Structure formats: C-alpha cells, structure tokens
Image (cartoon, rainbow, N blue to C red; front, side, top):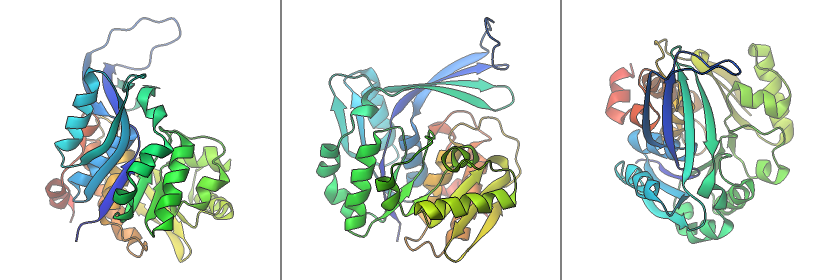
Length: 306
C-alpha cells in the first residue's frame, strides 16, 4: 500500500536565470537564458513524493494573483490534494530567483510572500488529513511556530514527522525538535545547526551525536554528489550517490526527501533501502533543468533502480 504523505510548506514561482558564472561586485552580465516554473521547497517535495508513488496532500498558502492558479494546478496535475492550499488576500504568492551557472551549481533568492502567513488555523482546518497520514513533512520556508504546532498535532495521533531544516537557521526551537521524529539537513545546514563542519565520516558522527543531544534520534545528512549519511539508535552508515553529470542541482534535495517519504516505513526499519531509492531519484533530477520539471516519476526511478 502506498504511503500517505502530507507536506506543509512553501509554494513559489521560480524564475530560472541561466548565467555563465556568478557576477562580480559591480559587474553587469548577460544571461544566456531564462524561464519560469512552479517551485518552492514544500511543493517540490510534495511533487517528488507523489511522482514516486505516495498519496500526497499539501497544506500551504498562495496570494490573490496570477501565480496562484499556476501553483495549484501544478500540484493537481500530479494528483496532489490542494484542498488545504488557501489564499492570502494581502500578500503575493512566493517567488524564487535561481541563478543557474554553467557548472550546474545554483544560488537562490527568495521572496516568501504568502508562505509566511501559513497559520495554526490552517493546520486546524487540515487535522483530518494529517491524522490519516503516515508522514508529515515540513521545512523552514513557512513560519516555524506553524510547523511546531502541526508536528505536535501529528505526533498526538501517531503520525511520523520529518523536518527538512532548510533554509538553515543556527538555533531550532527546542519545542520543534521535541516533536521531530526524523531531521534531514544537507551538510551545510547540519553544520549551521550543530556548529560542526561536515568534512568526513568522523565529523558526520559528531554531527549525529550533537543532534542526539538535541533530541533527534533519527538523522539523515545529504552530502551532495557523495550521497547520504544516516544515524539512529541502531547505528549509522553512508549510502553512496550514483555518479552522473549534473546539469542543474535545483530540487535535488527536495527530490531526495519526497522520494524517501514515498518508500520509508514509519518505524524507519528500511532506512538504508529508502535512501538508496531516494539517491536514484535525485540522480535523475540533477541531469535535467528546472525544479519540478526535473523530478522523476516512479517508472523512471524504477528504470534506473537496479
């Protein structure tokens, strides 16, 4: 039976600006191309979960503008429930400007807009959907107090919570960590939170120990093209990434997390297998341009999954 996944998070219209490299201070540079597509960390993760086979619902906020229907329709096209994507009449829909270099690396500027008005009342309206889920996922592109409240509601009814602490902040409220079952940063986010740079296996174990002290007993650190490290009460390990030529790393981490949630058991007993599956999904994403357009379907992942 497919996992039921609820994502509480951000919806953005992404403007992708292709450039040879990042401009220097005071430098004017011509773009080689530009395009627009739906995005946002929350929406990307929901699309990845849905395309990988999960029954997916979304809790989010859009503005009263032209982008709103585009963002909703993008989710609906992947059979994601948008019953709880509501409208903020005061703020515009979120936007992101992605500076994509020829190397495949990207830098991102974000306007939060309506994402920042997601509230406890929105969570209350979605309690029945949360109660019916296997996983509730959230990030830091919506208010932390709303995520904390949603995670409290989820845990009170036995739903497993996954926190993607991105964009990174130095201090995560203890109340949120207390209701987080699995925390999943990348190496930069992990270092920001723990103060321990991720450079090798020893430093990843030190990060895991620090997170355990903070109350997070289940941890995954994604380490870019290398793969992903995991640690829990039963031990730790590293799952290598699949070697491919990256064209655009946008949404690689979001694809990983969404695909992971589609396969992971709520008791985390198949952690390594789920990470391997998620690594395959991400390896496909980075070979394509854009955020949501690059996220693979279950059939595509299975074709790569040997």
